[in-house]
Image (cartoon, rainbow, N blue to C red):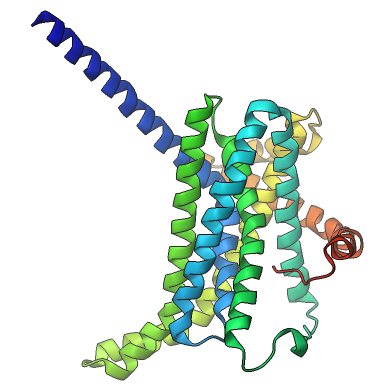
Length: 324
């Protein structure tokens, strides 16, 4: 009997350790996902454009195909690569993280540049043959999955860097939760966004009560502005997160001036307000300065990307438009 009680006590101890591990994994996954906020918002803001022009009945299937491709990107390619990096080349994580941060800065700055200096985008009719919606859908999905791969690589690298040092199984479990959670969150949000105007139209048409029809009209009117706002927030988040990643990466690699400048002004601002507001003000100043740095870096990278890296990649891959 005493042996059975001892066994049960051991089982209970193992269960407690397992429960604690699950809590640790969930907590780490939540923190790691939060660190990738800029890429997440950008992903949610970008994806709806891939269903533009298709019938309402094809919108959700297209989002589903892109989400499935995103899961494959994260779990079958990026997760093993991240674990190999963590196990055999952890020194590469910071430079790769900075590379992803620089890409976020470039993307954000490019969006602002195109908004300030718009140019016409010429569509090659030969690449989009009329009367072949299945071909166009497959092409759109393929382009979206390629774009998602870049954003997913950023998200997984940011998440990997945010995980405290632990064993490979803890890292694998945390990254798996991040990959699945991020994909469900982003593409679930996208699915809702792309159907909101249809919901509004249905409420206008079929609503039995005047308030229901009014709400439907409000949804239809609000969605274009909401999508514009989401794009603005996504752009700001990219610049903030990208700038922060690069500034901290430079600091970790031994170059401190920018980090110290941001920290100094953040501290000054925090001490200039009542204690209750100090944390929020300090964070806001840090985010704003990181964003300004990110914008400056991104603007510097635009000619490098468009005149050097872009043509080189096009030559290697045989051409192709930038999907983003």
